[in-house]
Image 1 (tube, rainbow, N blue to C red):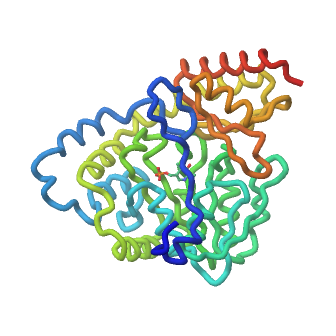
Image 2 (cartoon, rainbow, N blue to C red):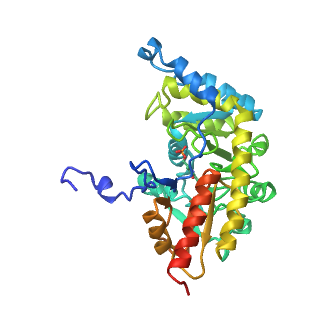
Length: 357
Ligand SMILES: *Cc1c(COP(=O)(O)O)cnc(C)c1O
């Protein structure tokens, strides 16, 4: 606290990211990074880009990257926006599109950055409770009453809505923007990108941080009607003209174009996920069905905070949220097969050790 802080700064409730430990030996299952490296083609493209041209500013519009993304999804380049991580893309969407007279709606259990952006931009919001079994109920959003944002698959639950239910929400709210945060869609969700041609109120946001294994590069993008994209560009050009540097533009483009590598990584994650879910159920855990690269699980006999602490002592970190309704759950990222075997061994030891109830 400083007397020089603005009143706005004093009021902020910043997002708290998952721990990025310095300790190397840890098995890190807490922030949903891909356990495999990025596409070798992306790494090569970044090495090639590392030359004297770095003295020049990058392309402020990220045109070459946007063209690759447009081709990948069968869209026009005017329907693609790129930014410094999808968090930045989302921030611009909040400011450009979600700040309306009607309050913004999102689930009570979802990505915890949404309420932070509301605080930052002074956006009024309503939290719509998920059902008892932590599912999003499309009927709760079918009143054309204001803008909407949700993650599909949802975080931290991992559950996904089918495309038909997503479309029902978009179609029922023609006078408001619906933002779908598809950070995890490549791991098993159904993307709403195919709806963009028919709905001018739909914005779909993706990231290269999860399925493309490039969390360290900071690249995300938004897909939607050209007029929505133009709104994002206006905010971006009033904030930072060059959100993506030359290395990021080169690496991201190669990563987006390497669709075979993406498919291979996602297939591996899905297989490891299925094995992990089965192993955790064997240990007595209740596991929500996951379409993401993490699972959300609770043990009926053990407090989640206690389990997370015991795992930490065994050099495994998972995410635990001190939040009503989900404080008994652990969110566990899908790592390599070896990491997940170590997790199950550790949990089995912890459960045996302390008796249980
Ligand atoms: C990880 C995540 C993001 C942020 O991605 P970045 O591109 O790394 O900023 C956005 N939304 C959800 C739901 C996420 O889990």
